[in-house]
Image (spheres, rainbow, N blue to C red):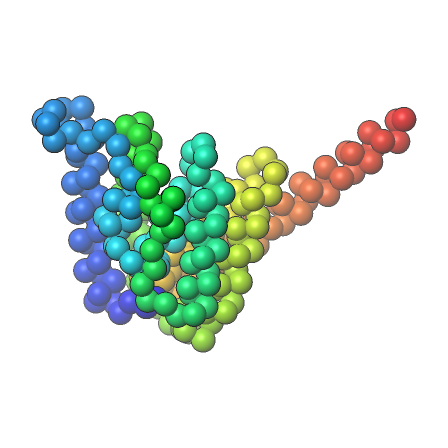
Amino acid sequence: MRFGAHSASVHHQDTLLRLRHALQRFDPDHPEPARARSMTLSELQNLLGPGSGPCMLLMLATLSGLPLVGIGNLVCLAVLALAVAVLLEREVVSLPKRLASFSLNQRWAPRCLKALVWIYSTAGQWLRPRWHLLVHRQLRLWWAVWMVGMVVMILLPLPLVNILPALSLLLLSLGWLFRDGLAMVLATAVGAVGLGYALSLWHLLVLGWQQVLSWF
C-alpha cells in the first residue's frame, strides 16, 4: 500500500473530480432520469480507488464517524481485515460483501460525499511527501496494531469515544495516500488523546458505580 509523490498527486486530483461529479448527481436540480437516489459502499469505494487499501481506510474512517445505524460493527470488522492486509502487504483489498452492498440513502450519500470532497480538498492543500521513514514498509506491524487499537476504542460503549479514533484512522489513511509522515504523527497523537479520554471516562464511570454501590 504505497504511493509515489507523483502518483499520489494524480490520484488526488482524479478522485476529487469523481467525487464532485457523483455529488452533483444528488443535486435536486439535476435532471430527474440521471438523479441519484442512493449509493452503495462498493460504488463509493470505486470512486475513491478500487482495491486501494489507503482509500478503503479513508472511507471506513469517514463512515465510522457518522451516526449510521446498522453499519458500525461491519465497518470495524472491515478495518480489522484491512489491518491484516497491511501486515501481509497486500496491495489489493476489497470490502466484505455485506458491507459492499450496504446502501447510503438520499440523505446520507451526499453528506458522505461532501465530507470526502472537503477532506480531499483540504488534504491536497496541506499534505505533501515528507518524513518518509514513518511511511516505510518496515513499520507496517506498528500501523496494523495501531489500527486494531483504534477499532477497539471505537467499539467501546462510551459516549463520544469513537470520534478521536476515527479521526486517527482518517489521518493515517491520508498519510499513506500522500506519503506524509507528519500526518502519521498526527494520527498517533490524536489516537493517544482518544485513548487518554477513554481511560479517564472509564475511570470516572467505575468511581461513580462504586459510589452508587456504597449507598446500599
